Length: 342
Image: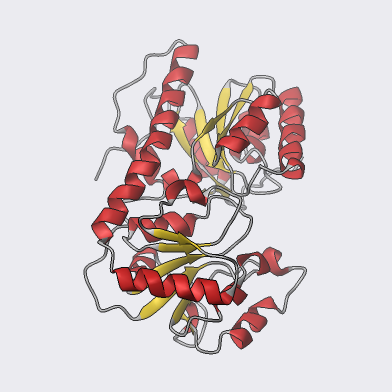
């Protein structure tokens, strides 16, 4: 089994110390998130691992890999409990049919809506923005009909391992696009505040993959008050979309460009869009809080008073060194791990 070392950061955080509840995103090969990376360090004590899905489990191979991995972990650590937070009802059905504990709770509930908010008004600079890794599954070729395009991108070598020339292909196929991460000459990651500002300066957000997970950028666009052009897809982003602020376009450059023009012309109220997506995310947040309350009941521990909304403000990929997380677990005080607001 793959295990983390003290020098490798792990993705996830603590929701509660007693009972011990940890959450993190599934990130292959760590299919149980912290349930994989910290299993041997925590040992066979009662621990609950809540696992957000970073890629669709509506297809059999990815689902079966999870089930095999969880079974291996249970054999080694029978006191560990794994609960999958599904992005779609179909994923929930698949896990429950296999006898695996799960709820519907999109990973997009962990986008900090106090950070991804409607920015101060600025003139619109771009017809569309696409926040996506420069990887083939993001289908950047569907952007070729858009003249004014901002590309926010990320460098993940594993996503282009089979096609390492793809980033250069995107630059060639989109000569008019602004690659915002390297406008100063060299690549740099953008801070969340910079992403918010760029999204706010765009008329439309693009979601063009055919298959992935819930697509974090989709909810980020909407929380910033920007409408979305999407294509038919599997993964979960559709649960945050509605025809009143999005268009499902055919996967052709012409259809995507027409949809962008249509939404640009509508000039939708950004506050309406933000309220609508918050309404769609709320039931998933409620389900997660209900799950946590149920775990406390099962363990015979009273649910403490806490500002539980802070659970959703940890970020979708929080990173810490293993020893940092283990030090937090070791705190003797029994209380919810959710911090109080600053």
